[in-house]
Image (cartoon, rainbow, N blue to C red; front, side):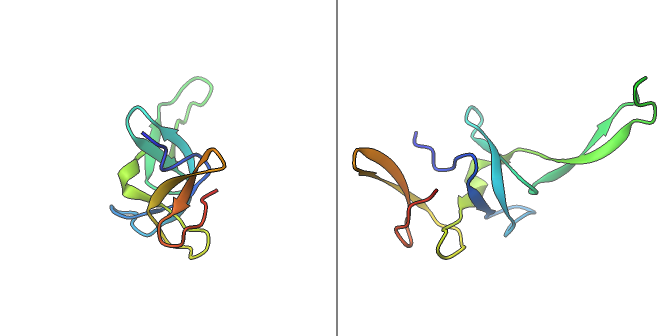
Length: 104
């Protein structure tokens, strides 16, 4: 299946508790069809105390998000758009459906 979302893309969340937030894709997990988006779907991680860090710690980190819950942002309008594929000069390129602009 063609890669609708790639690492480094700017995406907008279209459903869930973070609906409307934008961020950059850090990782794409192809096997489970999930993406890791910077600053979106933050969860608390608890770390047990160790000899090196006797007090332990609690910190926030990004959790994977289903790829169907995010949509690439059109560079011209700044809003979410669907993706279509076309072959130009022998290369497959991703285009925004609404404006026809190439996605980076």
